[in-house]
Length: 117
Image 1 (cartoon, helix red, strand yellow):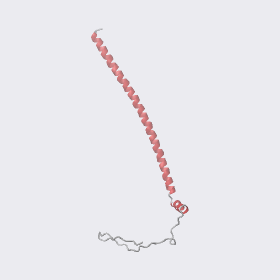
Image 2 (cartoon, one colour):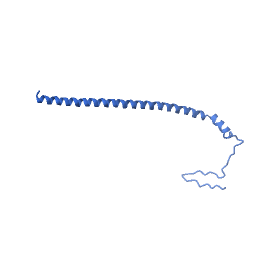
Image 3 (cartoon, one colour):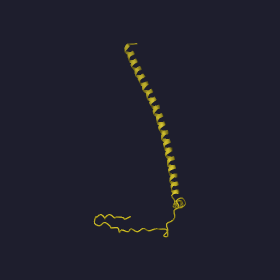
Image 4 (tube, helix red, strand yellow):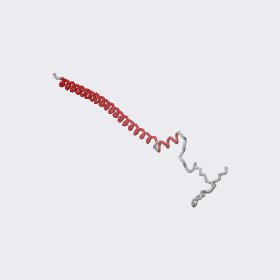
């Protein structure tokens, strides 16, 4: 076998080895990328499930809040727990302002009102 032919075979062998290493590296990269993709997909799926759960809980809390704030319930709690009464004219005290209020006219500020004890 001539020397020239041997060099050509060694060159082809090196190229084949280089191509084999490139294919193996590409295969490992593909496996790694698919694994990371699966991890990200499962994390996304968990996040979506958690978002649904939180949305359901939020809706439940909104319904509960509306149920707690009904006028009848508020009035009952005010009467029972705070001993409050419904305002009637018999128990209403009206307070009159002894100093008349002066309205500002033409951009002039009203004079300060002095209150005597």
